[in-house]
Length: 371
Image 1 (tube, rainbow, N blue to C red):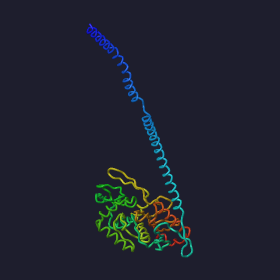
Image 2: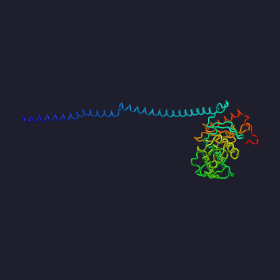
Image 3: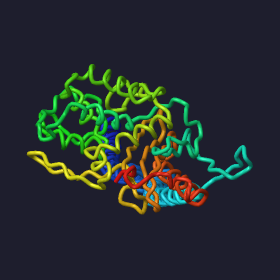
Image 4: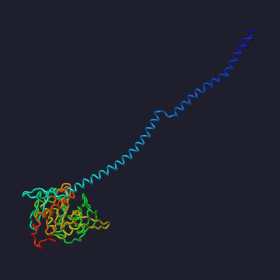
């Protein structure tokens, strides 16, 4: 009986434990679930909620983008302002330079009189009728003359050329390193057109083509230029090529005054040098040239003239001018500092001469004066 009672008591205990397990399991699971779910929810919330550092990064990124946009707009505006300021500064500098150039400069000569103080390497006023030097500054010093060389090119070529309508084909070799030119390979141009290109537009290919088309050929033509210089007594003059591109083309202001006076005596040359503009017509195009001598077409009566410039020579100008009383003088300026300077220095020299010695040049008879 006792064993039976013990078994019953054991079974009751087991049943009670089982019941508690059935009841307590879900309760414990439910009690534990909120804690685990809470951790997961907290983790998710933490992931979704911006942290302080991420907020700072996002704010910094937005500020950086805005700063870049403002900087870009600011830089573009400042760049335009700088360009405008630089342009105004250049204009003011040019205006100041021009004001200086337009004002004649004088110095005291050996006789105590005021004479021009030219702002150039060399200059001269020469009377071709009397061969008298009326003013000079370094006039006998050899200097590079650049495209004033082309005056002798025209003189030497026209010695043996009578047919100005003869056509010549432009050779590709003439174009190599030519710098200034209005011509193209295989263009056909007459001698007359080439002379206009040479003396008005200072065309280097025209100079080379004339030399090649001459009686002497390219090399022989330069030799003939030097022979002609010797015949004219231009003792400081040496030619290296027919265009003047090379600094080895050398002469003096005195020699160039005599040369421009001689060349202007040939109306075939002088009539071209007096033209302000010239239109060159080729099969595929039309080009209008403007005379590089800016005194042509101005209040100065130019009877002949030629400009020249390369870096070694500076800005050069040789002119034959007719004064109001009808007399002619050759005025040469070599090695001026700028393009306008050579023209203004020429004006200053002529104005000084006209004021100082109005009767000095009245030594020519009417039949001696060149038209």
